Image 1 (cartoon, one colour):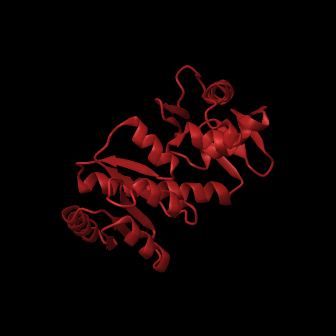
Image 2: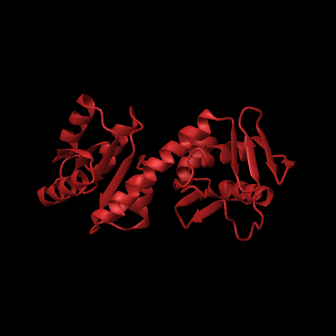
Image 3: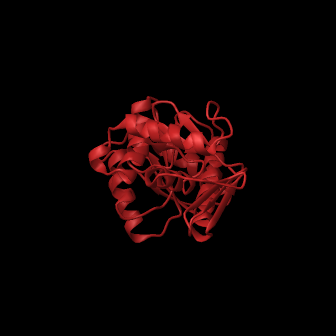
Length: 229
């Protein structure tokens, strides 16, 4: 796997390069957002490790620009650990968020998880039947069953479930879900999202008060959890 590391700190770049190369990753380095985008435009990468706090173009803008034309997985690194920064990074299109300082072992584990998620999303998109526990979704026929019984979902509930499954084990922010399912004008309508998530849980969860499939990431969004995470 070819990885691009974008970070303005030389010691961080060196440490990441050594740690990743020891685990058989091919690593390219960029010391600024602008340099990182230039490399993205000329070389194929399968993963980007991106620092947020850089002089000039910050990581948020780099992430937005990459996402405007590429779906390459992005792991964000930051000394900031506020929920607002995490939400902003995820809204910009990051796949995961790691707070500095961190160990290379943690980064490697996050990368492996992202790879599994990407493969799971590809499988759910390429195969018409998804199953997890008692839940079965036939994407071709738009039929949802729980323990063999057909469950009626509204169009919005089905679209939510479809989006969550296709991003299984990844946190989707409130804004990502609202803009994708309802449209940009509903980006801040958290109440409607909570109501639809509650209705969806009532229909597919064994115990809606203790959801196992659709889990809440407090003040950030939701995650559809599979056993193959």
